[in-house]
Amino acid sequence: MSKKNKLLKLGRLVSGDGIGVIAFSSPIESSRLERGLSALRERGFAVKVALQPSAEYGKTTYLFGSDSVSARAKAFGEMLEDPEVKVILAARGAYGSLELLPYLDFSALTANPKAIVGFSDVTCILLAAYERAGVTVIHGPSLDSCVAKIGVSKEAARSFSALLELLEGREINPFRGMTFNRLCGSERGEGPLIGGNLSLLSSLMGTPWEPNFDGHILFWEEVAEKPYRLDRMLVQMKLAGKFDHLQGVVVGYLSRCEHAQGLGPSAVDVIKNVFKDFDFPVLSGVPFGHELLNLPLPIGIHASIAGNSFELVESPVAL
Image (cartoon, rainbow, N blue to C red):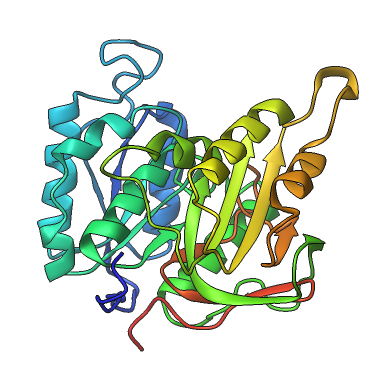
């Protein structure tokens, strides 16, 4: 987002508001969809579902997508324009969001800011909305990864509660009282947040949707990528100058990102080597990404790093 433009914040979420669920990417298994929708309704929200998020589960009609590109793009546009929908929640991640980017119009989001929430493959939707509409968006749990599991997982329940507290304006900093691993760099950094899944960040490089990292704290996480692949993606962005003007780096879960039999450099070794010559602070072990405890990170909102602490310093809600 251009530094000349003021970030648009969100309206406060209240009980009875509408939450729209859309499968930007892959379809969701039907029983998980129903459990997630029931959990939203039990908490007093009106729920609207775009298209049929489970109809193509296990099929390849649209390759990896839940529906055609045109249908998903149209459904998203309708949710942006729907005054009853206050939050748009991703049903699932996986694959397929990238192909939507040329067909998305974010003008309705600028005119009427509302929260878009998701992670993983939905990273590209979040960053496009932030860059093109100038609205804060939420890197946070999806219906499938979290909401459908809150009845059986304390971590999932905590993640969903943290998301609601953030959107309702009851809590600014979900990371209050936590400490993390300081890997390298300076002691302090402050700036607006930007980031998401590393593979998606890498995939956006060289496209019209390449995000501007300058002046930001970059957060990223990854799942099922070996350390040599992490190294390749990070070095690509380093060579492209994407890290030259950062204020800090915050690393979330590196789920299943190990070499077979523990051979070779670790993911942490890779991170230390890539960022060793920069002055900004680099933290790891922050609870977001592909695990049940997936705390929300509002893109565009200011955060700070001090020693081994990381915290959000403003609300994404226009209080």
